[in-house]
Length: 302
Length: 327
Image: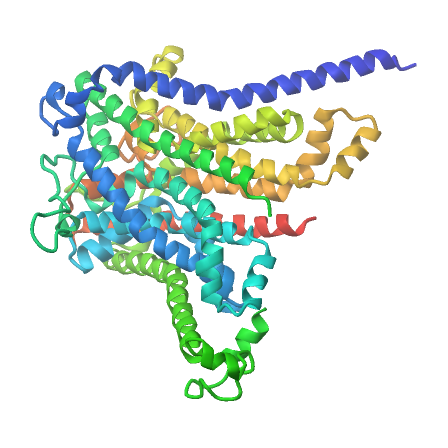
């Protein structure tokens, strides 16, 4: 005779153990994230102050700061997003709204999926070989921006396509019925409705680009930059200049990398502080993306 | 909707106002800007957008071309046989050896350690989120877990070197300051979300019917998850695993910071060794003159890395396609 009650209770116990194991695995990731932030804060919190944020790099750890790295990161993001968003949105719109199913479209799609899987350092090698050495553009903000823009292009394209796909066909058909051309439909209807989704994807892509180190080290971004790029505004006509695009730069992750590589505890404290600034930037970008996505989901009911 | 517009694209360019244009009635053409202008504007915009889409092909071509061109000059100086069989990699020394094996071994060992962490933990996380977790918990936990892959890798490198390594050294006092073990463990935690989120999608796509069948036969949730849901979602889960593998192979900063920079031919994870990516970062950061063997060697190493990840990407693509077709 099988003792059913015992069998059932054993199965239930088994299931509960499995459940607990699941929670343990889940917590491993979350706990690690917590430990990482706590560790950075414990090591670096004492260094994050106004002096640190407004000083240039220095050979003395206690006087060093991240001013040039912060400005460099922000300007680099400006270039990256300025290049990646128009190109990515254009490519996404083409693939979703214009292209017909043919071999070229299939190749483009497979290609984009593959580009998303290429390690970031390969983009660095490409930029080093093509932009820095073949076109002699030097390691400028423009080259860094192009490198990262190419890196995040697949993310922007995929986000654009998903946002467009979520718009019901009735919207398009209604506009066509009123005599709109395809471009008018896209410009007046599809792009405004998909703006939230595209913005979310772009912010996620930015949070990846702002922490990206390997491709920038590969193209030779220096660590010791004790000046700021020329300001984009000037007092005389035409008031805007793009000289800063040609300026050498450094960014936060590279600054942090150079400090981690130094064996002294003082510099490692600086590294922790730079990491803290960096992680606050990426986490707030991600939080912004989550908020936008959440509000979008609540607001839009087709 | 598109039939009318497409027919307007068909006639030859010169006859923009010709009667062949059936989509715009003659009366309307006098009223508005004129169909010709609208037609051309749409046409030009289409070409511009297509150019943007084609740029992705240009990027791939540029990547492949520069890797092949620079590597081919490298292989004019170094035989492919030596490259693939020599067990030393010392391109910058006077007595130079060009064997890629130590770098490949370093890459495989760190990847192996990372997978030993990420695959079981990621899979269990996916099973828990898909089969066990209440809705509210899942809504909170998923974005939090995604943050793991949003943390900059240089920060993970710091964490591996200055937090995980000292922690592991408490258990194994012999562990050196730089080790593939601690770099691999941290890398594994970083790729958990890659593994878990795609696996979870695959498991949630398994029809409820299959689970109900298992429950009807008296299986509990654990048996159902392991014997029914997991095998049914296997191709999707496989794609998730492969994404994780290809991330781990291409990961750079964690290994560059925490696993050491010296190419060593060893399969022992408790040793320091350089990976392909760490070598590229080390040498290109060290300002090699353009055209030197050291400079070309990073492209040869990059080519090997590119081929490795390409292979896994293609495999993952095939698996994902199968997973989409399954139900």
